[in-house]
Image (cartoon, rainbow, N blue to C red; front, top):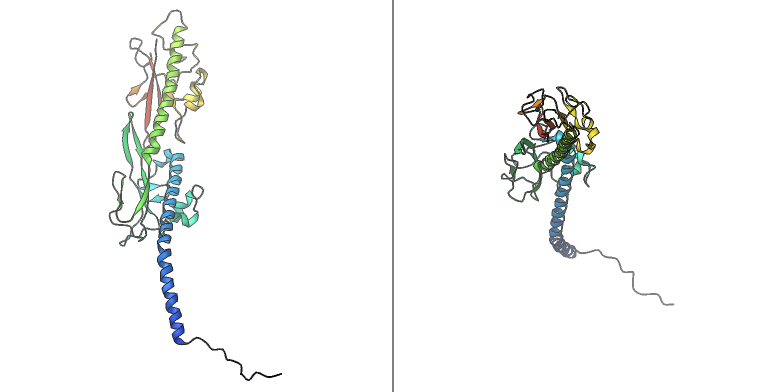
Length: 321
């Protein structure tokens, strides 16, 4: 057998020019990939940012809805741990991780991640002062909460601030959401007034029924309570106030109508003797004499107000003959 006359070929590495050419190609391809992926990453961040903002909105709305009465007792500029952000000279907002943790069960993100926007920056928080509007004979207190993303540049623009009336002004690439306290409190007030009207209507109908049950049809008798109608199913409040669910249970007032739409201090109360609340006073033989008709009873309900302020809305039940 013939032996090969060729010696074994040695392996050789890459030459310097080849390495440089390869690196150049890799660099060019990298820039091309980055150029193609960059816009996609930006789009993903925008989508993630929008999702998180809407998630935060729903979470804050749920907190406000379930703790609406308590919310207005908090100091101005605060909302259950959230406070208006501290903004440094460059436009960075302080991180409020612990305050956002209360939303953990209400939003998709949890822990410290909930306190950051889709770009990984701290949310900028704005909580208004105590706002108010006159509504249906009372004062409706509320506050606005805005959560703002400083955008892709991570810096809050100088023009992005909350005005004294609770409205947000935006500038630059900043975006955000606002939870309106008015939109939470107003429907609760209207629902409370509706319940009070139903209770008052039932009480007025009872007064008329009691009047018709007497053959003498005596208009000087106060049919709202046992004080002047011994056979009445309704006790006299005798200078105090009584909860509607207990006082008027015997005349068919439902328990669901005897409470306000708020989560606490929510008993609708009734007076039928000589009690007074603000400018409203019960008209009965105890307070007006028999010559001033018609007789009345008063229903009252607490509405949210700053700490230390007692605020009520009232409804008068008028005795019909």
